[in-house]
Length: 50
Image 1 (cartoon, helix red, strand yellow):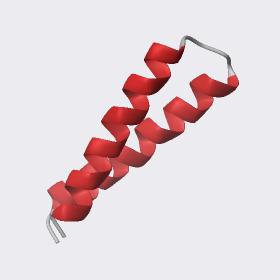
Image 2 (image 1 turned 135 degrees about the vertical axis):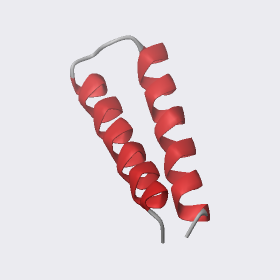
Image 3 (image 1 turned 90 degrees about the horizontal axis):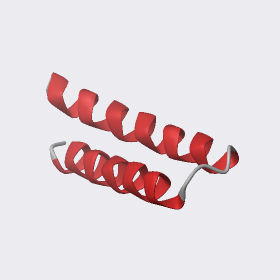
Image 4 (image 1 turned 180 degrees about the horizontal axis):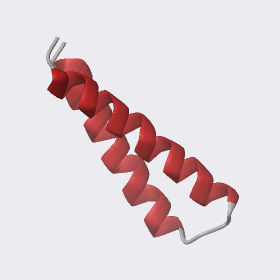
């Protein structure tokens, strides 16, 4: 596994954490959906590179 894989997985988890935090703070749904979507894509890209 390369360093890129670790970065993509970490980035995906980080963005999911941000989406969860924003959801708890009752911020706009559009921002939460965008963060969650970016997190899912980043995590999927990292997992597919394994």
